[in-house]
Length: 311
Image (tube, rainbow, N blue to C red; front, side, top):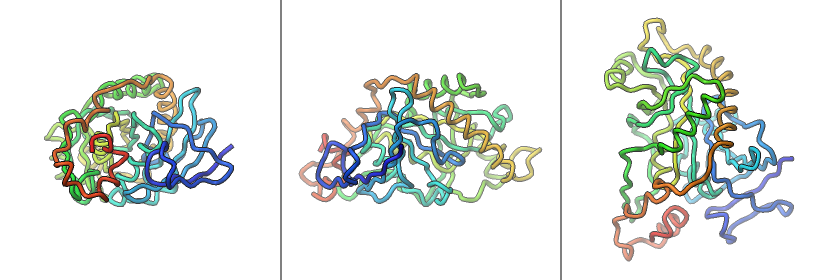
């Protein structure tokens, strides 16, 4: 049975500003969060589902969050582009999406994403678990900080190796062909690459190209979450000799098949994963360089959930 509630900005442990329908209790905290990409707009198979609308200091997330269980493991799920795929990559409120996950208690965040392959051996239908990113975006907000607070988190290794390993193992157990590691080029979009760009990225040694995961990785690090990407290859971009252009019809057909594989993988991932204390969950400990006495009150309040213990 599904229920519906509304959470105001702040943590689930804070009662001020929390407004819910009278019959609904606060949702349980979900240490595992999943952001679904193109083709993955809902999550059949979760038990004890609750749909939750969340407000954040950074605006509205892409859609309602779905909180449910896989066995005894609570999971929070969010369709990145909204149900019905309504939002362009450049229109996504990445900060609100990650902040909403933080409100729900998420410490380990898995981003599922459709990507183009930049390597012959990464065939459409394969899964890549990247360990690096290259940022080719120019119209995104990728930090919670600013407005009187400066923070510089370490980002040399943008993916949590432990979480990536769990995602890779879960994908293999679900029957996928998996490639461990590789660089994800994050482009602005919504147009696909030119052939010159596609070949440039190949010359850099990149593995896949997509439009969304880099900001999620940055914000997850600032929010002290472990983060990994499950990248589902749908095409060869436009560099491949057999692919004169990216075929949208073929991509949509493969997205449908990939969505079921992604669901199986996430279920297996949740069953295998044990929440642990990780260095990712202490990323802000020495990152904030601003004199605390100089931080504006409004900024301090907006960052309460993200960095309150350090301010």
